[in-house]
Every structure is written in structure tokens, then in C-alpha cells.
Amino acid sequence: MNQEHWNNIYEMVSAKPIINAIGSVTMLGGSTPIPEVKRAMDLADSSYVPLVELEEKAGKFLAEFIGVPAAYITSGAGSALTLAAAAIMAGDDDQLIEQLPNTHGMKNEILIQKKHRYWYDRCLEASGAKLIMFGSEQKTTEKDLEEAIGPQTAGVHFTMYEQNPDPDALSLEKTIEIAHSHKLPVLVDAAGQIYPLENFGKYVKMGADFQCIAAKYLGASQSSGLALGTEEMIRKISKQSFVGYEGRRIRGIGRPHKVDRQEMMGVVAAVQNWLTINHETRLSNIEKQSMTLINILSSCPYIEASLIENIIGHQPFGVKIKIINHKFTVHDIVNKLKNGTPSIWTRVVGENNFIEIHMFGLKTDEEKIVGEKILEIFE
Ligand SMILES: *Cc1c(COP(=O)(O)O)cnc(C)c1O
Image (tube, rainbow, N blue to C red; front, side):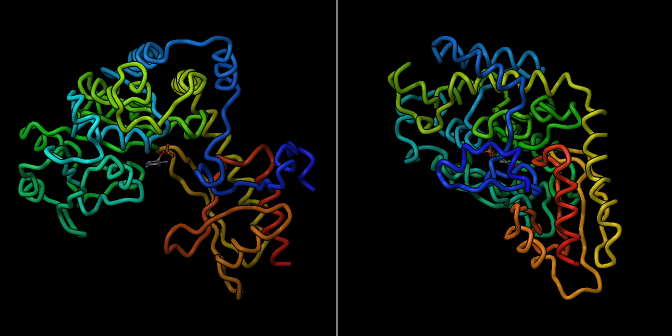
């Protein structure tokens, strides 16, 4: 049915497109570049440009636009984390830069609250750094951090999820205060902290040395991202750059983190767009799409569908679907949708007893297809 509006480019290699009702996830493609980004990328095709200069100039432009001291475009937020970890270990020393990921002779420990361990902290380790945990699963105190700091400490990592604040974690304010009193840098993963707009760059403004942002959430290519930070931090990150292989004849670990000139200009366009569009319209459209799905599902006695109210971060609203009085589990529904035609991808996050649908990857009216296909399963 729905194949018509799908570009058949994927057929050439016998790959099957799907409907993405999960949201911005890397395994399904992460993002669809918006027209403004595609236009910028097309224009960037028109000529070659020295990339050392473009990295620097585009970073400067973005830093001024965002209101932070410095910025650097990376091949994703994960890349920004790896390069930042390398930067706090090797600093400006070209010999150490060429030695990584072997950290011999360097401070190589990055402290992270036990409560803040998360899926992407592996990106920090990719630099050669070691993660050292402090605090317990229940709580982190100032003393926990003070006691964890030692002669091998290179910096402190902070995982930011403002949509899900944890009162028992050590706050970013305290983390910065304690780390800086020991002259240690603070890294913040704020990949999805792009709304409210004041959060875009906020952690650096609060005093963190670095925060990353995933450009996949901004309508740029999912293979791009941003490091924001102090001038010192961003200078050290840029010394790890893939361009260093030719530009400075220094082989940092950043070589496999290549970014096209097209992607760089795409990120510039994505940030410009994000910081100037009308977010009330954006949010109201996503809320409407979510309500359309809820209304379709309301006719089914086996489903309890409700609106997710969150608007903080990269994924506002969405729909929570519970199964009631029926033998099907949420996992049965996820599988049936995936194996149907068209294939619809949804997910149950962690141990949750509900399916979580997000509009990010749904084109206009695809939420209706999702709703109808769910109803069909129960018919
Ligand atoms: C998506 C994401 C990342 C990884 O970003 P990429 O740009 O995909 O490398 C890291 N941290 C968080 C919190 C994310 O949501």
C-alpha cells in the first residue's frame, strides 16, 4: 500500500524501507536532513575549501550564534565525546596526541557518577581513557566526588537528561565547583538537550568545559554533531582532528571521525534553523500528530493510549500504549507491527510495560497508518 511514496532507490539493493515510529534512532537512520540543510550541503558541493580553515571558521560562526566561547563540528555526539576525552588527556602535546589510545604517562581516568553510567559512555573509553565510578546506585554526594579525585584523574563526566531529573545525583553545579577547585575539566553529554532553547549551550555557560550536541536531533545528517566549550577545550579537541593528518602532519585519533565540508555546512544550517524557527508551531504539530494516533486507538477496548507530556529535549510528546484485557503482550504488538506490511518499527524501552511511539520519524499522516495497523492486529 504505502510503497508508492517511498523512493524505490532501496529496491535496487533489495533493502526494505520501514515506517519509523520509534523516533530518532541511529539504527533506523537517525534523521532526515531538512530542506535548509540539504540546500546548504548542495551549495557546499560547489567548490573545495581548505578544511582546517572551514573547521575553524564554521566553529567560530556557530559559537557566536549560540553564545558560547567556542565550537567544533564532529561526526556525531559520540565522536565529540571520544575527541573530548582524548583532548583532556593529551592536551596540546603532539607527542601524546600521537600516542593515544595508549595512555601511558598521561592522566587517563574520567570520573563518572555510578548513577550516570549510560549506553554512550563507551565513546569516552574509545580514546583510551578509563571510566572510574563514584557514588552509589542510590545517591551521589560531594564527598564521593572529592574522594574519587586522584593523581590519575583527567576530568569528570556528567550525563544530562533534564527531562528526567535525578534529585539524588550530584548536580552539575556541584560537579563543576568541585572539579574546578581541583583544576579538572567537566564534560557534559547534552546530546539531546536542544529544547528549551536556553539549554542549547547552557552547560558551557554554567561553567562546564565541554558539552556535546547530536545534530541528528536538529535535522542535520545523523553522522554529524557538535562540541561546544571553552576556547582551550575546543582548541585541544581540534588538535585531534582528522584534518591533522595532512594539515599538521600529526596523526591524532580523530582520523576515522571524518566530516565532509557538506556536512559541516549542513550543521551550520541546522543550528541556524533550530535557533530561529517557531517552536510553538513545531510542538503543536507534534502534539496534534500524537493526538491523532490516540484518537484512532481510542476505539479499541484492548488499548490504553495516552499522551506523553514531555516537551524538554529532542523528542517532545509521543504516545504511550498499554495493552489491557488481552493475551497479547506489548512485545507481541511490536513484533507483529515489524513483521507486517508495511513494516512499522516501534519499541518498548527497557523494562517498561508500554510501547512508546514518537513522531520524529513519521511523515505526514503516517501516524494514521500506525494507528490503523495496530487496530487491525486486534480485529
Ligand atoms: C544520540 C546520542 C548520543 C550519540 O550521538 P551520535 O551523534 O549518534 O554519535 C550520545 N548521547 C546521547 C544522550 C544521545 O542521545
